[in-house]
Image 1: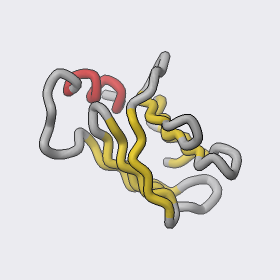
Image 2: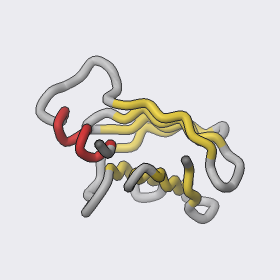
Image 3: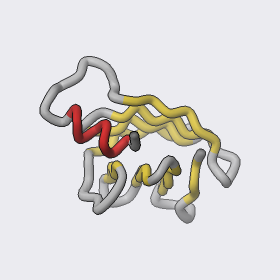
Image 4: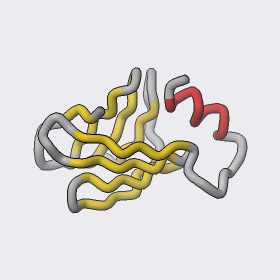
Length: 90
């Protein structure tokens, strides 16, 4: 089951713990830690830390604040920090 389906299933409930937690390595060599909640994602990307609100997505789980974005789709997480080009993380 993809993270998007898991988050949708939990959206009506307010879990005390994240729905899922990923520790990934990105194509640019950075580390990515994401704690996925139905309404937000807590992200550590390299030395940066963000809390991103849920955002519209046609597929997958997307969290963004207009500058930074984390988007999971089919097991690959794309991350954008607003400075460098987006990178894929696995």
